[in-house]
Image 1 (cartoon, rainbow, N blue to C red):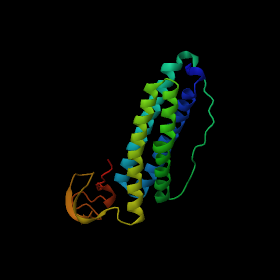
Image 2: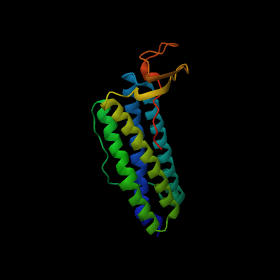
Image 3: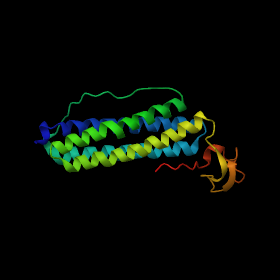
Image 4: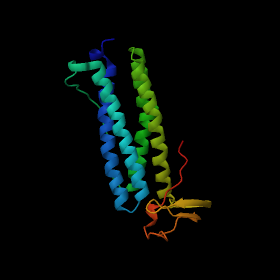
Length: 195
């Protein structure tokens, strides 16, 4: 199928726009986490923002690879989330968005790309869907930690590491203040098994 008349072209453009918006929303969310004293959480969210922009780059590359100079403007019609709320609510909302991308949207776009003869684009959608699933799990763990007030607590003794100075504390919870550098609890790494 000709790329310019394909649904794959539109799906790539929608995905590019969505990933750019997600990258921006994650930057806003990371700032909110940092302002609330969750330094490590902020770093995790900034990494997700960086991932989303890398996805946007891949979608952009495919559009320009197949469309060349013939692709000047792609009109798209799609809905994009604009929810607000506190940090906990925002984590939950973004986890839900990642779930939709990983389990519904990108698999459908991959199927369309395969049907239209763009197997490499289908593979790209499939690979990005897997990454979005890891984002979902990370955001859910952060949400659950805030919801249960156990973000820095474990049932068993565990190692917590301060990202500022590298101090490692073996305990059931991260210290409120690092004994070496005096940074707050939000600088301690949270050990999530997300893969």
